[in-house]
Image (cartoon, rainbow, N blue to C red; front, side, top):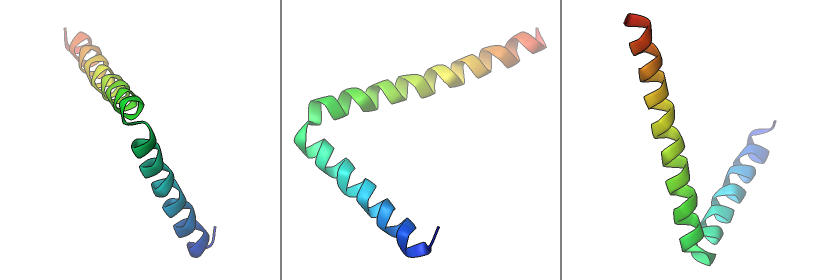
Length: 55
């Protein structure tokens, strides 16, 4: 992909995210909370997996 096209797409995504946050901040906050929960649960699962390997 050409560098200018990649830069344009990145800016397009950033502008869309800013628009989505401004248009619906409550929904954006729910999405962020859900993503954080997924990440935290993934790390807990990985920790539990390695803990069970060592047990």
